[in-house]
Image 1: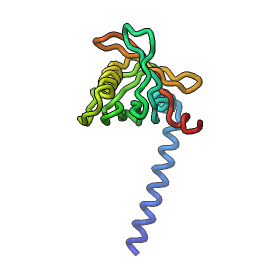
Image 2 (image 1 turned 180 degrees about the vertical axis):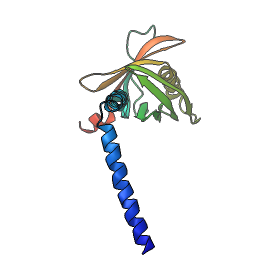
Image 3 (image 1 turned 135 degrees about the vertical axis):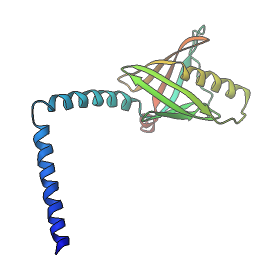
Image 4 (image 1 turned 45 degrees about the vertical axis):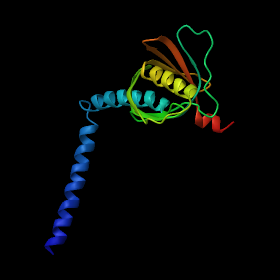
Length: 171
């Protein structure tokens, strides 16, 4: 019998606590502060969630080169954004690290990677790609779903352009 009383008391306490929380949340003093924090968090999550997903490199521009460089066929660099983590391949090796956003500002790295050896052209592509990625400054996603990351590194400035692999799968 004592067990049933304890269960009844616990249920009653939970109902009272739920009612008190609802009363506190609907008062004018607490609700605006919660709404403001929720709005800020929602905006940050929306900005980062636009990046979330898998992206395949379309082309890359580098300082001093008027023509965009196309990735080597069957060795196309990819990047996956998920939460605050980034991963992908430079065409040969897998890489991983962290990223942050603030508005359209993007910071990536430091990145770690596997250390397999590949053909010289693929290794050059990978080195340029990973160096550019770690120099990320800003990003933009166009209305047609193209992700553009502007970067700056010791070699200068450039742009990485990606297509969403989700969109490409529909083609």
